[in-house]
Length: 210
Image (cartoon, rainbow, N blue to C red; front, side, top):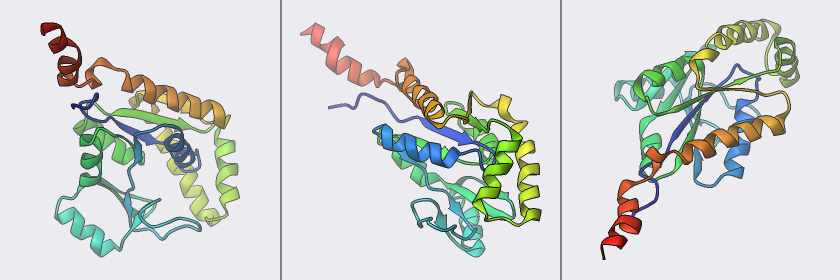
């Protein structure tokens, strides 16, 4: 029997560091079936509690460069001095199997993909204010004052790209933000273009011809 969806949808989520996009992505995956998280590759060191191949796939710069040479990334970028990349095969395999994929990447990577994948859904997560963002980053206690300043400067640069995204969610009250993200995904799944035309024929049109 043909599957109802011809293929999955790709949801690309970006936000300045500290806006809460990773937490939102993890929560929405636990709420919705057939939604997979695309694990990016990175050269940075794991943070406390992060698990290899679950949060990120952590590799050396040499390995990363080799993957670039083999053209294995859909996109890659250098952020805060570290390399991040989206592995083509992981995305393609999930989409072809009919699963939706949520990809948590920075604005550099998102803008590259916007040129390559027209049908992807682009979502930007905003903090309620720059002051709140600063507080969240300070609470992490993972950055030096100098690194924190760089993150805030980077955040302002990234926020300027918000209008290039299809949707903007302000992550002030978490339960409201997650509902908005859920609504976007459900609405995309209901689009007529996502339905497998062969499934329609087999289950409805061919039935009438008998």
